[in-house]
Length: 263
Image (cartoon, rainbow, N blue to C red):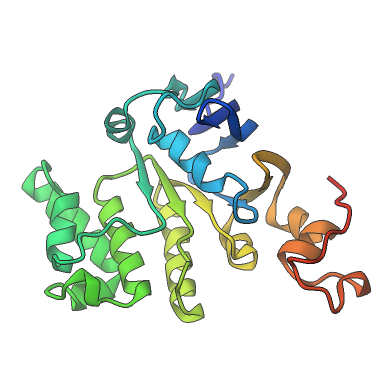
């Protein structure tokens, strides 16, 4: 006889996040992330994707106004961001949050602050194995790295905190296709090693290649969820996000095309 099922790593239930106490950035958003899962959130600019990550991380004061956020069954909504971080949630922002005048080694040392020496050494070795370029650039200032190398450094530093849940905001932004592939291949290894990943991304093709499940967020609402295959087969996802629609979209730019959606 099996025991009760473990709670999802992250359970976001009907959250509402407001700006200026009157503008809805998120309205009734619900998501569940499972153990070792990569969950991608796709959507246009202004859809509320970054707001979702910041709400989970506690970076928006007194938000969400409604709804609940649970990490391994424990409520974390409206907790202080440092408490949420200490519970195992690490947020990598779109700007990567690096100390650009410091070296790669110095940035990584910040991620190991307070750890026992042996544990820090082991974790650093894992980061170097995942991102060999960081070992090669150990004495180089962060602001002299390429965009892809900076993203590797940001993710590598976050892993030194041994996150239970990794929140990533637009990791492919400004990266070459080659670098994007390296970073996203690393995300698969990170999830397989035990970290659950919530990924916000505008590059739908890239995100769906590595995700286990995904959601479409538009105007603060989840309008569609499913596996990558289910989303890729949806006609509106194909038309608007993957750019492989039929004749109805030929000759029309994304900004001008306003076909009635089927969600």
